[in-house]
Length: 392
Image 1 (cartoon, rainbow, N blue to C red):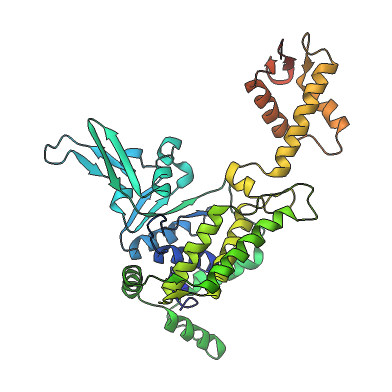
Image 2: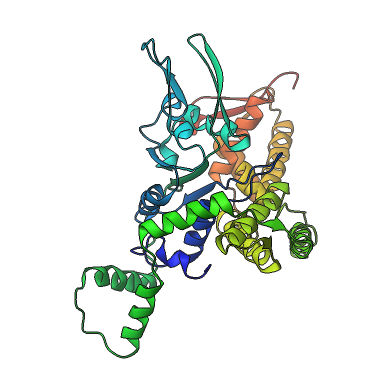
């Protein structure tokens, strides 16, 4: 069942098997407990034209209580609740409250204002929305799973995929063919794919019944597998001989996510208990998500610090070393008086370093030192001068 159901999720979209499996597990969800939620939140990040919006539209149709919203045109009130002048109804609930017990699909997540995006923190942490406006103070239930789609920074379509482009083009053209003269193995493959697809209504009913009646329990075998998988992930960053520093590979949140994913897979198969194979598949999906979202492009290694803070361990060390060198250069040049020109500082750092000095990294370090009150920058463009603050 786990291998067949993903074929019915957005069948017009070619490939993206792991993405479809992850989204399908989100639809089934984990088991809600007294202290922990079973809701799974998914963020799809990809270049334009990679069918993210189509997946959201499809999930919106089959989710038990699916609500679709656009991040660009949504406000905090539209997502939570807003006050009206109607005496019979003082408050109208928003998309997140309406999708309680279902999935809220948010497209163009990267274009959502920061103030609106911060509303999601409470909902993902605890299934409630707190309202305090116009004399109305209340808490609304919002136990929803969030499926969001966003484009990466400075994203563009990858033009270096000729093989995938050919397969994708063949798939898209095949959607428009009618009564194609297939024979032999191609015909057999087509028949198998059609037989494996479930109608939209049947898939929605299957998910709804599973969420309401199937509550798998964690077995001792699956529990041992979870502990072993988590310890294995944690030990990778601490014992990697290629790295001189310890890196964060997994946190307790990743362990909770693996539990929810394994519960969702067992629920999908109508199993009463979670098995070791459920945990293994959940761990595989977690590793794949970490590989695609938390890999340091400088080293090719997974670093959860890059995912959580936006800065990898190696990048933080590079900035710390650059910070020390900048302060040393200012001390050596009598920085309290005339200071040192911006261009000259970059050249001196480049001579002392075995690697090139990145202009963006240098700018970030200078801004951080300015915020700490250790130095100041005067002038503009090429005439900028870095000066040390008196008493710093």
